[in-house]
Length: 322
Ligand code: ADP
Ligand code: MG
Image 1 (cartoon, helix red, strand yellow):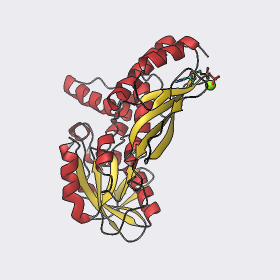
Image 2 (cartoon, protein in one colour):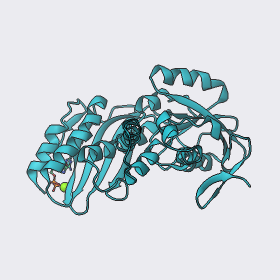
Image 3 (cartoon, helix red, strand yellow):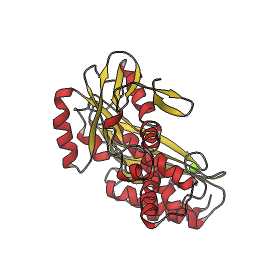
């Protein structure tokens, strides 16, 4: 498709790297993988109306399409290097590509990530990005390493993005202070910040790690299933933003924090004696981190309510075990 659009993408995402021998423009890119490192590769696709609402700004889509992929590298403890971009556009919309590339490169630039190729086709708006990164052999953060007695921790705050999506769908006539809180939550939805430096800091320290894309319970559930263990979470310990707590009642805020997707925080496990160490490391990076529970024998994720009772799900979400 449109040579000019691809040329514009190339210009706006230009990034000098010695390990890129040939970038956008030929039939394939030529890359120089570093000796002695594992190559970490991940692909995520965003479809309009499924993964982001219709009407999302092009720059937000560009940022998020890259962010969700970098988050997968963060969850492996890998450092990003290269990306491929599959763009499916309803028409050759130069303004869209301009905005998209602006959002994409705003996140790519500080990480020195090079866009080295891709494909552009016509169809309903969808974006798929493949990212490539490096991690020293034996140091990747896999999902299968959690052990009984490990502590469960999470970076940042949970539930903001899901609350932001609801805020978008229910526009209210707000006073100014509430409008600011809503804008914070919507920013968390549209501009997730992949926890790359935290992932690197956790190399060789976390026993298991996952990024929270589908909600804490679902993603921690993957660690439990792959590690052959269970997790117990204390609802009272879940880190939640002041914006979330100000705009929603306790039950809704808890629901968002447990089951809301799109936060792209890291949930990880560490041996109990290493918790203070890891907390200090991440704090030094300016990354908030909270201990929320522990790994026990069994399977699945259990949640203890503030009053000490176990919680259970019904069709509407989580509630007290009645
Ligand atoms: P081919 O038909 O040989 O695949 P294309 O016209 O699809 O050639 O692509 C030409 C060049 O532009 C290739 O180097 C390809 O990697 C790059 N390219 C195409 N679309 C994109 C895109 N959306 N993002 C980055 N590079 C792209
Ligand atoms: Mg092609």
